[in-house]
Image 1 (cartoon, rainbow, N blue to C red):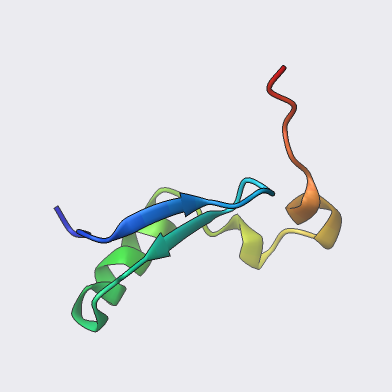
Image 2: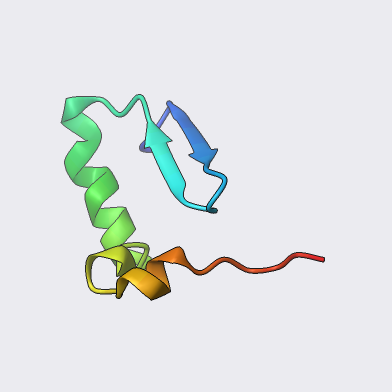
Length: 55
């Protein structure tokens, strides 16, 4: 385990990783990059604003 804090999903289906210790930030950043959860860095505004319909 790397993280003992919490995870939250926003109304726009964004993932927030909370209560990250400063010592663990590098590990969390590496995992985000490894699993390609950092697409927001290169995605257009339209792509970042899209959400899926779950119905």
